[in-house]
Image 1 (cartoon, rainbow, N blue to C red):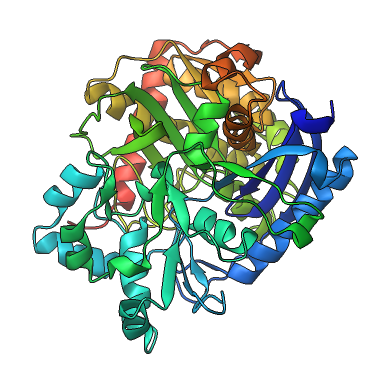
Image 2 (spheres, one colour):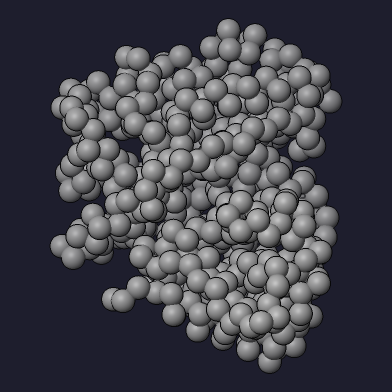
Length: 497
């Protein structure tokens, strides 16, 4: 389906930049992808080159259009989704970043966050932003940039610099510097945004030492964000939707009603539980975040964030050389001894929800002389499932109703063995959709609804279909025993209080 019923999505992620063209039914017409280099200048530091992000985004948009056999002028609208907390500071005049982008996984501000916690900041921050005081979020990263780059603070106060998450930086570049804006989902991940009032918080800005002049305008997830420069793609594409990657995935999974939950398995793992108009305050160290904002009205979600999911498979491949590709993991997991006893806690950059221990580090437990690569690979996949159970248990403890099913997406969900083990570990059915590119699909749906290609945001639910459903089969005593071994291993890697 061509013409003005096609929409384009930019999906700029942690390990790759992608662009996809969808038809009005959510079917993929064209796709292009480029792997994004990561830089690790010190232990716990993770960076991207903003120019790599920009260049790859432009190339993949052109590639997706070519793959779809369409011209830019045949595209109804463009949507953007992005790795969320990754922080970029750039010069408003030149458009150049002052430093590499500091990636959401980066832990360089752990000590800074510890100091702020000791000063008693966290309760106020959690009350206003729904977030915890952790290096994960943009606020401490931006404070670090302003403190460490010579002259940056003075330029920022003079209004010469701009801050943004990746969506904001791409929007700026795509529109030729005409639009400095973000959406409420991305703003809600900064530690600087009051999710109840729907505005940047002056008290928090003062605490972090961040000039308001740096910040973008915060808008709905759907609306007119400007248009791309005509010479980029041959025609000006209207940019009509923006959402952070996990919120976009929830939209693509049609988790639009309270009580629905999705989990995305990419570099990390992120579970979002829709709580509707209620911003449910977590007492189990989950995050309260903006799920969507339409017409100025926000809906909220409880979110659990796991830092390492697919990144553990990359580690098996790149650091240990146990596999040549992620596709080998399913067969190896099936070959492994069922009661292998090996537990991997992949706390390579600390532990995320519900532990939030920036200083924890990964460990492999329970190895014996006959432990082989199959058992280690299986333990890596099992760790992803156990971490998901940690999140769902915390959500239920916070007052959420236990879900009847978990909708899953992301690169790892092609692995049937993992999804069956996930269902077994949770005791909950797991549903994989027909279109697993749900992050990009969510951004495309936002743009399509604003452009009139879809009749409205509610029409998304009518397009969602399950491709496979995995029912739990593991006996309860075995489920409990395996999870207890996981919990014990996690306690062993935690840093001293």
